Image (cartoon, rainbow over all chains, first blue to last red; front, side, top):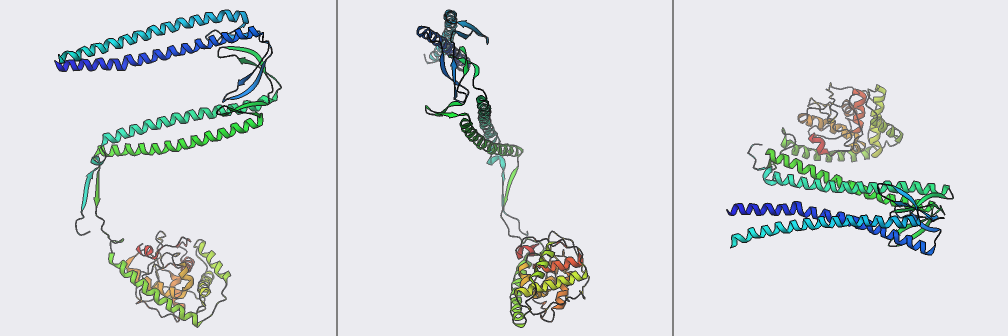
Amino acid sequence: MDRLREEKIQRFEEFVDRRLKPDLVRAIAERDKVFEQQKVFSDLRKNLENLEKNSVTSLRSMVNLGSEVYAQAEVPDTRHIFVDVGLGFHVELTWSEALSIIPAREEKLARQIEEYTRLIAQIKAQIKTVSQGIRELLQLPTE
Amino acid sequence: MGEPLKGTVTPLSSVFAPEEAQKASVRVQETISERRKQVDQLQAFLNDNNGLVNLVKKLPDQLHHDIMVPFGKAAFFPGRLIHTNEFLVLLGEGYYAERTSKQTIEILKRRGKDLESQIETLNAVIKDLKFEASFFDDTAIEAAEGIVEIREDYVDEAFNEDEPTKGEDDFARILSRIDELEKEELESEIAEEHEEEDKADLSHLISLTSLEPEGRSPEEQAKNEHLMSKISLQNHPQEDVPKPVKPKDLPARPVSKDLSSHVKVPTSSGSRLPPSLVEHNKLKERVSHTPVPKNEKVSTSASNSGNHSSRASVVAPVSKEVSDFDSSIGSDRSKAFTGSIVEHTHNIENNNQKGQMQAPASKPVSRFKMQRK
């Protein structure tokens, strides 16, 4: 009887350690990625708004050629901007157009994040259940 | 090898447990793969670096380049590269340097060299780890097979099984012979002075010795003999002017082509034996010092050593010289010099006559080693 119990306990623990915990870690990593991207877009939006506010027409910047070697670049006309719309496509837009699609993009990202959060919560709940079961199994013998 | 030797027998598996050896091997393999990944990463950096060097080289070709200027991570602006010869290079810790294209290329090349050296060291580390891993593997295999390690006490047997004792005797004989020869030398020095013998001859002789031992013409032989004597004279104004004499009493000697050992042993003992010429190069100096006595010595030694190594061939020239200088030197066959004396000149003559022996100017070997052989 005890043998059986011990085996069950061991199997539960293994399940937790090998399946649930890595799943949790992975889900958290994915969510972080989406967070980052969301941040990128929000930064872009802020910058664009800044540009518009200051009516900046031309721009000088440093372009990273790789290995942190920068070259000077000049943007003579900032009216047109190419925005990444996913799947490797960039769409040429004006400021106002860009400013309208970027929030839409941000919203989509937020939804993704929410989904990941739900997944993470699910995994955490599973881990809790299994631990509880193990604890019960352990408590019974001592009773 | 009379008595049973004491020893221990240990199965390898007790020293290195096979499973442990395997585990260690696995661990080392993992380390190896880690290092390999690092090497790959470094290699990737190196490739990027090279690509960058090419780019930086080409940029100044144009005044402006039309490019897409990134704006954040997800947007681009169409624009152009200006000041195409000026680059800002990160030196680390927030320090930048503004450099021209050429200077940037130099910086990048230095970085590339650094990366290469890192790769080199990593590769060396990987090699060592591989050796370790192979060692572990072998040990595991051997232990698994049940290979046993046997240790026995070292019994100092003679080198030649046949004559463990002779070695000592020979050694003593050699010593005594050497003493005698030295005495003879002194005497001959006082007696004669034939010094002019040429260095030219000497050099010629030496060159001859280094050449292949082809059969030489008798004149050459004579000359060699002459030279040989000259050599001796050179060092010690010696007694005899070597008379180029054709070897008269050349007993038929088996010439063995035992080049490996270069030991010539007179087959017959007794009379002026075919001196045993051993290791022609070995006693080159001695030759120069006392060629004459050497001959004698060699012959005597030949006789003595005749018993112990039956490999060599006789050196005709030696005997000839012996006959030449017989007058000056009392042949003391009794002072058996089981010579492992190598006389280069002898070799030459030998070569001349036999054309068989090779007189490689090998490095001098210790007497005893020669003797052993």
